Image (cartoon, rainbow, N blue to C red; front, side, top):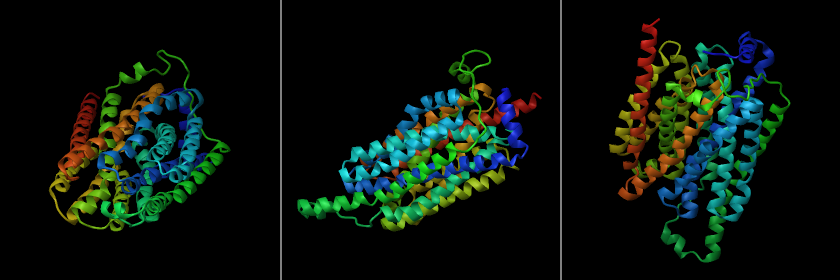
Length: 434
């Protein structure tokens, strides 16, 4: 792996155990928690806003689209900022956008306009694009390359912790439990209907306002914290970074495709969890939110367990195994009935847990000066979370069954099996040639 002198200096300082970098590492790892937290409020927002604005499954999927389209739009600008100004600058810009977007939920709720919620989510996601483009590769360079995948899985484990806390503890604050039928809403006079919609919309204000203020406070702390950084030379050529150079990597090209389908699968499974639980298992919205918390808990436990297992099992082999298991679980939730569907979805979360960081670290492996460009391109692939959920929603609306829509994540896991198999063969061939 080609490493520039500045990267060698950072690696030497961090791997030597210098305690002055411990606090910056903790701060960066906390970012994984925060963006995981806001992402895992989206499955709560979807049924909540579907109810408040009387949306179809396809229309409610635009919540995911407004979030993940930002990754496609902002990943390259984020990569440029970090190449020119370093990781810390990218993190600070991301936190400011994240915080401001969260605070904008207050006027969005007051306006009772669905488009304003989508706009606030888009601004949040622009911030998350900067954070993920910066934090993911930043963690991989802070230490030996041989443990980069385990290190990233460890930091991403706190993303999993947020996946449990957000729906389990914040979800009940947003979901009112009031599920009026269209007939009941039609029977209301204009004033009663307006008050009902205002009450439903207002429940999101306090959680997002508090989150926004916390994020801006974290930005202030990071601004005044000294952090190791790497700035690439702003030039093209053999010793500089370039898109053409990055895309010569077969690993990166495979990683972009795999990440597109993985994020699409994760968003499809999580965002429609409550709809699946309430329809296939027949449980109430409040109970479904609690099970969504267990979904997040399984995701978190899977991250920690996967980080441990990777000490003994090759990452490519583990990814291949987990993706194949999730194909079988998708078949189960498509054809199952009752609580077995809910338990199947929770199991999918466990086996999805290692996929994002594992695919990410494999994709940027051996990129050298092109690491930040490669990171931007893989983050752009998160647009799969914008494009695939509407496909699931459309299938659900057309067939009248949300379970039929889960053919979409099943196909996604098939693609990941091919990615993991190809990378495993590549690793075997490389070892054979040594």
